[in-house]
Image (cartoon, rainbow, N blue to C red; front, side, top):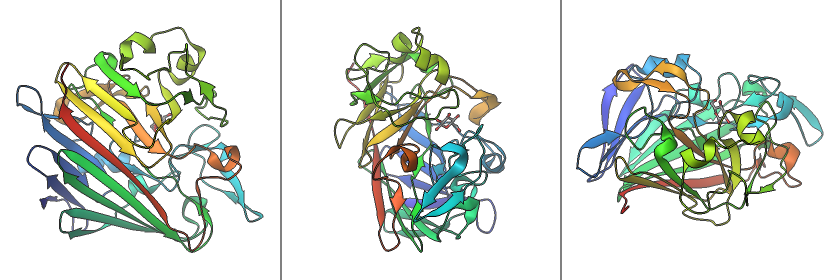
Length: 337
Ligand code: BGC
């Protein structure tokens, strides 16, 4: 069932999407997920994602808490690229590079909304040249909650060849508080990760996870690996790396023994940036909690970061007349360990 639960302004609303046990709050401001409510093993309902009490904060802060990120998630080297012989410069907002769609990317935009049956449809028309990107891009994001799972489907078309890489930037803490995620177990069906430079940029090179702290092919406590002496972990201040998936479903599982809750992420996308919230700065979030580094995990499903420079056939290139379509499902359940 979908209901409008808050009307902040004439055009900014908060929606609740609910089945028997799972309730997700989504705003049409930035397509932002503000709450994910689910009962822990004692039956107490807890909130599994970070966010702010006041919707206005989402527009003022960085960090992309719960936001839909676009036009291009992750980094583009120097914010420069060439399509069909034309050079483009998009906004540079992260050291020398462009991050998460630029200065006012999709996370900071008000989407139109429509409710059709059990689906919330948020849509946004990004004008030709917005943040420097070519083509008028029309994005639709379909949010639905069913059988303890949140599914987000993304669909886009463009009037000129352009780049697109949409993700959701929820910060999960399955303890349901703002405590360290070192006690979370993580499983990533990924044999290769991409190393980063000091600015968090990848060059597309893939490294075998075997015998590194990036091997999560079996469920492993994050705390066991994140403190290892490793140059890549030092560069990222923890995990802030693309993991390339070995399979096309159920690629990531995150679990908290404290709450008993597990999350399975299943996506049509080929990889995810796993980010352990390393740069959270103690800012005030919901319930009077302060959010510090390494107290949440973002599972940012996406195509190859800086794909336009790193891939021979860039997966982020959306041709005029083609349709971008991807889907990520977040399924919650009480685990058995
Ligand atoms: C990036 C981080 C960044 C964070 C918040 C992540 O996707 O990889 O480096 O700090 O988003 O902007």
